[in-house]
Image (cartoon, rainbow, N blue to C red; front, side, top):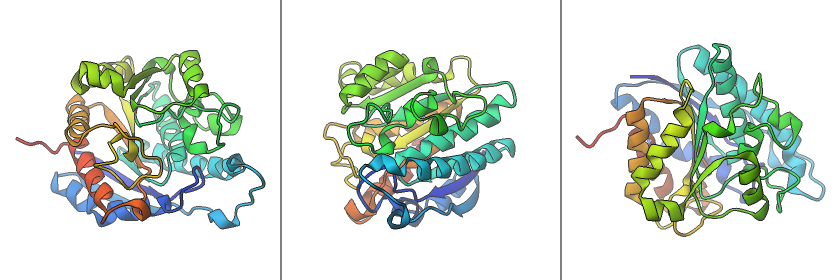
Length: 302
């Protein structure tokens, strides 16, 4: 069993739907800590990191104006995830919007690099999150963390891992994508990232896709960081998200992915992001995501 360190990051600067800052509280209300403890894990609850108030951060004409504040949050978060790894813990980061992953995975990468090792990345998401400030049509930073973890885009956000980049493209697998901006499509090819779309899951099945994703993320690495956006699940199952896209993973597909991740024993850190209780139905999405996290951390049917 693991020592799991819960780190809340109620960040809402990376997107334009209010309420995602309440995601960490929604997940805790859904009894994440006790459910992990019931599996035999030791749970350390770090609480929530202090966040800048969205209404007090200066913004002029574009969402990209939040980038400096987001970079500062990600740099602080990276220190916490790096410390968790150094101290033998598995950091489980509760968001907040997905821009935080530019910090969480960077910190984990830094700690493993100190041992002469590198990490892979499995990204469960309806979106590719491979925009840079130059390619993003909205300027929303939650659509940019993968690009920055690969060393592209803004030098400050891309330079948190030491040494950089945080991950290599050959060790990154994006699973469940079904809504990519034109610039992201071009970037996916330019970066060399393997993107498993929902069409591929439809054609090949989730199990075959996850076998490939786990192989990619584990090839030559000490393990992988798992970043899970609640919107990778179909909105009929997970309505409490800011950017829902029809046609996502089913309840059982989502659990199978997590169960295979648990079986691999290669997950070294995890994000759970983009749960928005304001848009949810009686905390249903947070409850579902807590079940998924327990599957990823060893809950078995038999």
